[in-house]
Image (cartoon, rainbow, N blue to C red):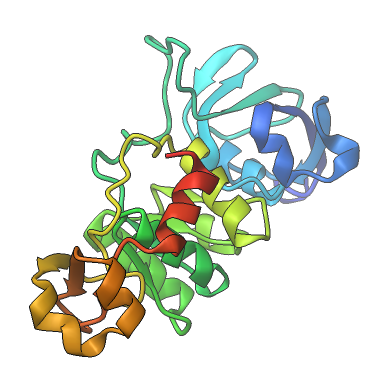
Length: 250
C-alpha cells in the first residue's frame, strides 16, 4: 500500500507574479494555476516543470510562509512565486537569488551574437562563440562569474546556474534595450573600451600609427582612434557610434 501511495496524483495551486508570467502559456498568466504531480517534488522542480527558470525567482511563499527551493510540496498548498525585487524591502524573508554581480559581465548563447556585439560596443565584457555547448556556457559562467544570456530556457534550469537572463524579444536591438532595463545597466556604459569583434580591450592609439589602415575620408575627418589589443581592429567615433547613442539616448 505504501508503494502505491507514491503514485497518487496530487494538486497544488501556483500563482506567478509580474514578468514570470512571460514563461507561461497565455491561458495561465496572471491567475492561480493548478499544478498536478506525483510524489513530493521540491518546489524548485515544480516551478521549472512549468517552464519558469529558477534563476528568475527571488521569493517563494507557500501558504504565506517564506520558503526555499528545497521545500517539498505535498498537495493542497497555495504557492506564490515572485521575480527579483528591486524596490521592495524583503528583510526577514528568504531571498533565493544571490546578490547581483557588482561588475556585470556576460556569456551569450548561439542565438544572441548580435546582442553580444551591441553589449561590447557599450563596454560590457561579453563572451560569445557560435559553438559553445550548454555545459561550456554554464562552466564558464560559474568560473568567471558571468551572467548567462540565452534564448534556451534549458540552460537556465541547470541546478548550478546562479545568474541568467532570457531575453523575451527576438530582435537584437530590442533585446539590448530589454537587457539594459532588466539588469539596470544604463549607468554602466563605457563605449570604446571593448572590441565588438573579439571582446578584447581597446586602447587609444595615435592617428599616425594607424593612418595607413584608414580610408581617405576617415583620415580627413577623425583624429581620435582606438585599437584592439587582440585582433588589432581600429575604431573611431563615426556615424555608427552616434546613431547608436541617439537610439539608446545615452
